[in-house]
Image (cartoon, rainbow, N blue to C red; front, top):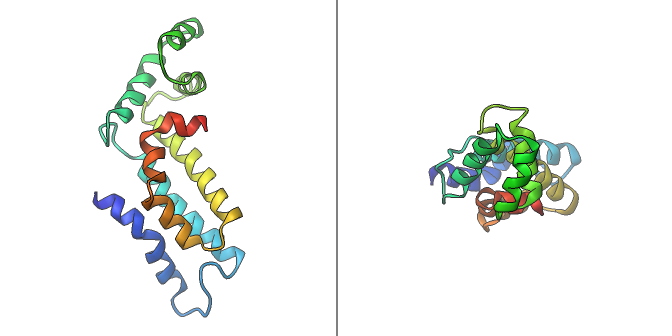
Length: 157
């Protein structure tokens, strides 16, 4: 719970530290917005990428085990697995592809963390007028939690 609380308060704390002594805020210019989102994005990425397979519900462990199941599977075995599994076919294909490139199943969290962080930070940068409020809302209103636990659904979206 402590890492999550740190992540939830991190954008505001960073803004106070970064903008101390300046007569402008995080939203005042493009460079400041980019620096803010890069630092906050790094924190979000690390929280997703470095989490344990045992965090939260059993979803993370299921994704981890799916990686292990598919890492030695041939393409034909993948097709059979897709027929039996309730998981999205695109997600299974992604896992199968990545598992044949990278050995460690933790990479599924690294990949999803990078994908989600880039998508969220890009969306906030392009569509928000208040970087701090947007990042705090992302983390604290359940969207972050959904991306972490509903990883395959979030990747499908």
